[in-house]
Image (cartoon, rainbow, N blue to C red; front, side):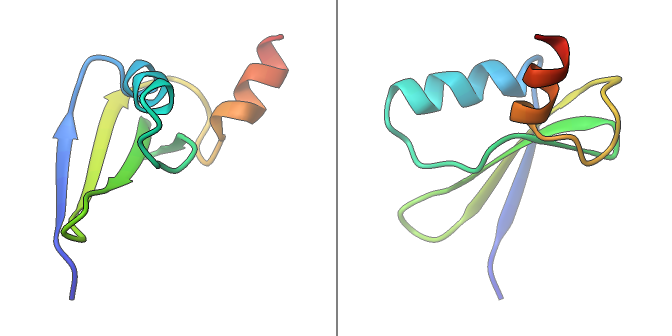
Length: 70
């Protein structure tokens, strides 16, 4: 069983962009429970979830949202 740690933050998408700029492997942001969710696994195998509130529809990915707002 793995360990997950969830952090609520002001802007999970901005963190995702910062992670990508620094080449930190992470999953594409998606909306779950009215929150943008960015998932990162640390070297010890802990799953770190960064979440921030949004009004974007559930299960939307960042790339889908960017295409729709275009």
